[in-house]
Image 1 (cartoon, rainbow, N blue to C red):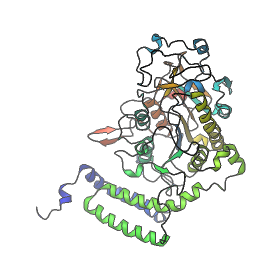
Image 2 (image 1 turned 90 degrees about the vertical axis):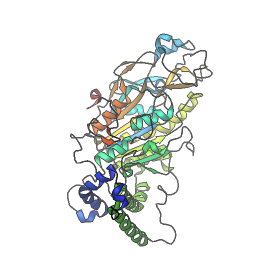
Image 3 (image 1 turned 90 degrees about the horizontal axis):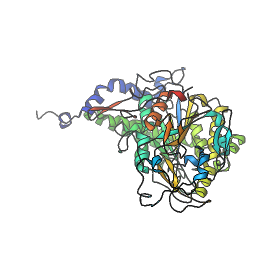
Image 4 (image 1 turned 180 degrees about the vertical axis):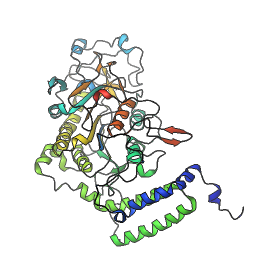
Length: 486
């Protein structure tokens, strides 16, 4: 007994299965670290991923998720409610609210006065979709969109709501959607991560609700699947550049020695996270070349830059990040998440939403047009929206020119485009108060199930055994919204 190593005695189930799979894993890791040994003239195939995926022929190869953190007001942008003009400053009927939960921010109000949108709506596109004057550029490409007005969630506060829509649970610790796709489908670019996150600045800063790294984390999956967050200033990735005095050859020799030490430790304890660490160091080394090339937009035609608007020249802006998202899509990044904050408009909503829409409207439309003209929209799924919606009743002082809106999870609007989604449709209907769904509800589990379906993934079969049960992005729920599929 004394001759047995302690590490053999304390080996966990995870280590055991990791070691049992190392025969297959070693070949996959070798192709990641030394791809020239596996060179072929055939098309680039995914690295990593599960051998059983995709479950069926995918319509989309990649996802660009434009996340409006803070919850944009659906009735000021997409959910046209003309009857509310007659309800100005009247109380929300109890028959509409139906005792539904409200936040602590308005629970102390003696009244819940109706605040009709002050923005004009017009019908656009072949099918006459109603779009607010706040979105003139997006209105021009509405025939490319599937506008879903009946998305709903149980979460009513920002952090649990964003955690919920990103990971399928309001409780932190689950893998994010991008991590699930990296785990299931792998990567088709060996020089860039499968999952990249971009944070957009507003007037030079971020502001708004905090966004934590667990929102793009890998949870209980291998850390190699977590999102890589690119910075808006300096090196896009921390420590990407070699420090003074270290050449590329020195970095290469250091990584080789470190990989040998890590491999030795892996042989001793069988922890699969060590293999992840080796792969991540190698990815970082290759990113020293690939990321600067990715973020250098000097080769973009002037007409393309003009299409995204003047902010495209300022790193970190939403416009610049939308262009980077397209460049990443070209290079095979599986899942790109673009965050922009400051949509949490409890007061002074008209002024603030004008600013936010002025920031995102033109780049969103440009991204769709850019993908279309490059022949990439058909296999790129673009998703737009936030974590919940806003209330029809006013929070704070109400006037004909100004109002605020509280959180509203019962119905809100998202749109999807490309990648297997039916273009030019508006799906679902809400009541006259944009308060309850009356036709075709789409829960966020349904939304995530549909996103996975577009990528050829059966959401019920993409699972990971953890703590004695099979986990998945959609928990134990979710139905694919087949009505919006092309």
